[in-house]
Image 1 (cartoon, one colour):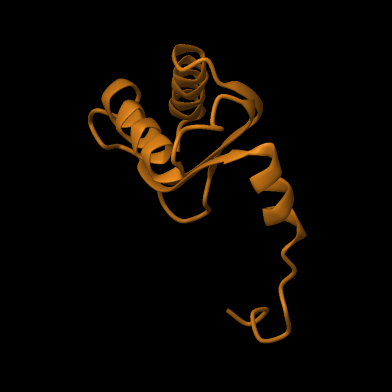
Image 2: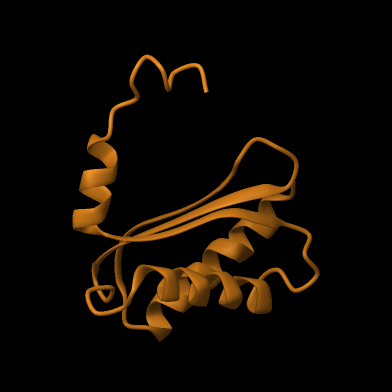
Length: 102
């Protein structure tokens, strides 16, 4: 996978946050490790409070496909948009012994 394509995708995520007045504290765009699959994570201090999770996720997904991946070279397998509070709860989830083998 070309690093320039990842950089272009990250720049599109940053543009999306500016367009929607989202104060992002964390943006991750990284390969999943399988082929051209990509994971995108946006954590925001402000901007997601009154925006339902599925709507903001779909909006970002569609924006990325239109502006950074129109030829579908990359597969966006995971697109997460979280408030800082949601992210803190997500980080605290521990993998139990029955989940370690999954």
